[in-house]
Image (cartoon, rainbow, N blue to C red; front, side, top):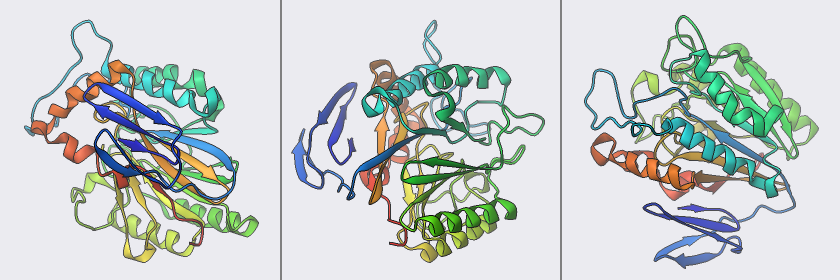
Amino acid sequence: MTVSDDGAVFFRGTEVDVVEGLAPDRPYELHGVAFATLPRPPGARLATVATVNDVHFGEVECGRVDGADVGPVLTAAEGADPYPEVMNRAAAAEIAALCGGRGPDALVAKGDLTADGRPEEYAAFEACYRPPFGERLHVVLGNHDNQADHRAFDCPPVRRIDVPGAVLAVLDTSRPGEGGGRLSAEQLDWLDALAAEVAADDPARPVLAFGHHPCLTGLPGEWTDAGAHLDPVDSGALAAVLACRPSIVGWFAGHTHRNRVGHRPETGPLPYVEVAATKDFPGSWAEYRVFEGGVLQVHHRVAAPAAVAWSEECRALVFGLYPRYALGDLADRCFALPTPGG
């Protein structure tokens, strides 16, 4: 399920029930599930930001891991549309419908937009996402996009995006031919200077930092493979910047195809967020509701019938264990971010 400050969405197989008009920060029980809506931050709602990641245009086999037997490999039915197109068309339509059909103030695509970094794969991504969002769409490379001998598209190493009430810092964590991520000293210096500038201008204005690779936290439940996160040294350097710049309220990544929130001792409650893939179960995209007094992350599961049918099929991945890994707890999906300096 998904919860926000004013609603909830329930999935039972391919059935979807969207419940609207709920009061914030209140307990409810619906469909036999007890839950509480998110507390609404004080003040007016100023902006909406959305993200997708691991959309994998061009992929034709879901669940294949080279050199390992991890359960069934799924493909689209013969004659059916490729599943990345099914999932992403539905996600793009849902995101475009935000804010009464105006769409979000910014959409950040956090990498792995292609399966193999081929130009035609990125062209398919652009054909899906550019028409509804135009210049509000911002892209960053993932490891699939940045191959050893070519990459799908160009992006700057760092980028500042201003939306009402918040600043988005987007950093390219990919390196050619590497599965894991890196951040250079120059990128970290830029993030540090950006946070200082924002805080000097308005101490209450949050900075949300985005990249493809998660920050290593070293806590239980984390992948130990070096390709699953930022380099350990770079992770520590990123955490050091976040520890001394309280205007930065979180690090938001993809790559691992799961919903998870980690923490590091030196940054206390600050979340290191992983959002699951758009292209398979549970079919994720994330919304960030920016208020005068705080920011909410609201996870969405793509709800179009064809998308739900495919994502339900993907429950069979990893010998049926994939949902336990990918979905995460409700608290990993929907939550309030810390306030700057809070």
